[in-house]
Amino acid sequence: MKPENSIKKNIKIRSQLILVLLGVTLVPLLIFGLLNIQANKDNLEDYERLQQTNLAARLKVEIDNFMERNFGLAQALSFNITAQIEASSGNRTVYELSTEKLLHDFLQRSPNFHFASVQASNAAKRITLSEGKFNFDIENELQKYYDDGKVKISSGGTYMSPVVRSQSLGKEVVLYTTPIFSKGSPVGLLSTVINLDYINRLIMETAGDNYEICVIDSLGKLISQANMEYVRNEEDLKNNDLLTDYLRPDSPAERPRFSINQVYDVRIAGKSEEYLGTFTPVEDLEWALVVQLNSQIAFKPVQMMINRSIIMLIFAAMIAILTGLFFANTISKPLSMLTKATNVIAEGKFDQPIGIHSRNEIGILADRFNSMSGEIQKFIVNLKDAARKNKDLFISSIRMISAAVDEKDPYTRGHSEKVREFSVEIGRIMGLSPEQIEKIAISAILHDVGKIGIQDSVLNKAGTLTPDEFEIMKQHPEKGAYIISPINELSDIIPGILYHHEKWDGTGYPKGLKSEAIPLTARIIAVADTFDAMTSDRPYQKSMEVDYVFKLLFDWAGKRYDADVVASLFQAYEAGRIKLSKTRSSVQS
Ligand SMILES: [Fe+2]
Image (cartoon, rainbow, N blue to C red; front, side, top):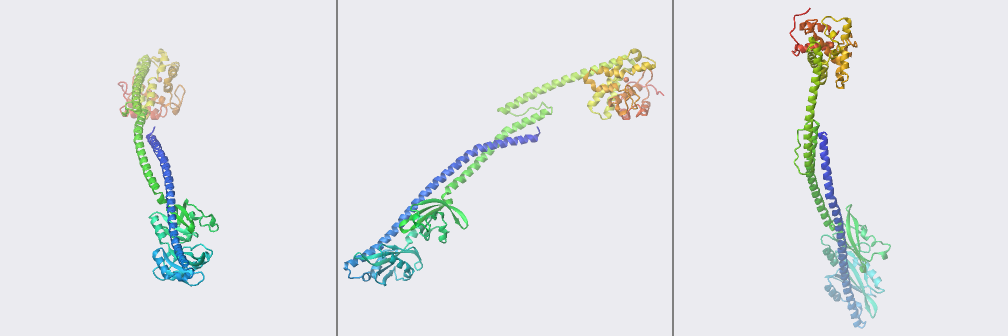
């Protein structure tokens, strides 16, 4: 395995471990957090709905009470006037009895009233007083409602006008009209103007900083409001989803009679914001109350919980990642060492133990690995030793055969060994591989092994061979190949033996091969064989001078012998790597 793959493996283990830890840590936290947050949100929403309902109910009661109390005061005044009429036995008119003082005392006692007016049914003129001083602007502002009230109470009952913004008072007011009776019949009417300051204060104080509260009339017109700065006109309220049913103008009978809680969106400055709101009708007055709270404020604790949960998740994730990294290193580092150790063993080095000292499974694996590596090393050493001995035996056997051949012909004693030496040097000069040179060496030492099969009378003949004898002698390469052929392991060296008498120009034997058709081993042995023969004493010739021998060899290069091989032999000789077999005699011409 390459180191890069090992690194990828480590990264993979680390990533997987971190992912598992993140999953185990974060998923339960996330599920618990989401459930908890949702439960809290639900609880908060329930609480908020209850809170708003209670708030709206309390405000409704307060507003109802306020208005009822003031209506009661106005009615008490009208009863007072009625009582006085009754006491005068009907001789005095409403007009006479309802003095400015009476009205003035009433306004003094009733701070929520700004204005009071008495008018006899049969008179166009009326007595009118305003709080503190005479103010007829307000009378003009409310004229329309005076008239409406007059018509409404002609059949009995009382009348309350819509809420009016009085420009002269700078306040929201309502006109309340109640009849004055005499002997069971209405003889006049009392009109009072009630300011709604109390309601405004009540709304403001109840709203505090967070709640948005408003009181609206049946048309959606704002009567009082706190914190609802975004409301600029009636349309703003009509677009409020909470008031959709209440403001349905075509079916007032279907208006909701009870409180409604709802979550809805309000568009403020082009942006949608979620609100939780409560609607409560103030039925007697045909008003309604809206209490609402921005969801961001209502669910602020939930948002805080979400933020805390996110921080907790991030913290847990960091712990998981750090833990993952730590344990991944604990696992992957020894694994990486094991991987490197296998690479070292793959390179044939068994003597480098793994330095993992751990009591866990990886430590045990490393110990086993080291034991195994040691056993393999011993085995390899034994194997190499056996192979070396085998090879030595083999080489000795070959030398023994070669010596046996040489022994048959005392004149060529040591020839095979010299041919081996020369061939090896030629091969080295020619840059052949060690394996090729080893084959050449064995081939060279056995090149004349076939001479075992040549009868001694021919082999040892002192004189010149007859043509028939020479034909017998020429059989030795084939006989040599035949002798070696049963040994499969030596099949590669047969060409060197079989063709060492072939000539470059094709005039050799046994096949008459030419040039490069002759195996290189055979071409090398041929030159080495001739060189040793010419530089050694033989029965038929004295050894020749080396320079002369090389002159002849160079003459024959490209004819009998491979010119490259001849040149390589010369180069080896020049380099001092060729040692001749014995002292040479004088130059033979
Ligand atoms: Fe030979």
